[in-house]
Image (spheres, rainbow, N blue to C red):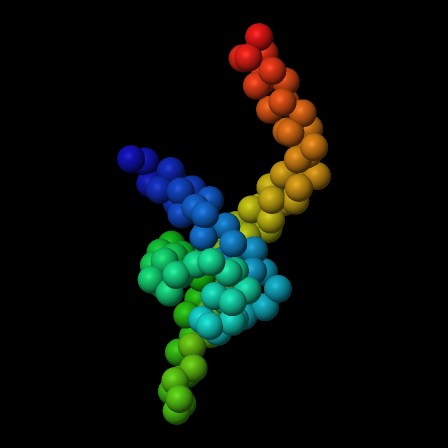
Length: 112
């Protein structure tokens, strides 16, 4: 697989998209990020964050305090990717009615 396709897969994965968009607003702790995204398991969120961190899109800041505190934020590269993904997500929201009409027309043609 081409390296850029792998990064594209990470950025556009189900949880990757949501993590990037959520971190656009501000840094988040793991638990608040999980709550904000919803329906993501701890394991999947951990894997997604590690993958995005490895790709240079997310920064993990572990503070040496008790109890431990870890914040996640976007790198400059991650911010750029997140804005692109957010624009695509906003486009889908704006054009959902058109997609629904296209689906109905397709389904109707298949039934005929």
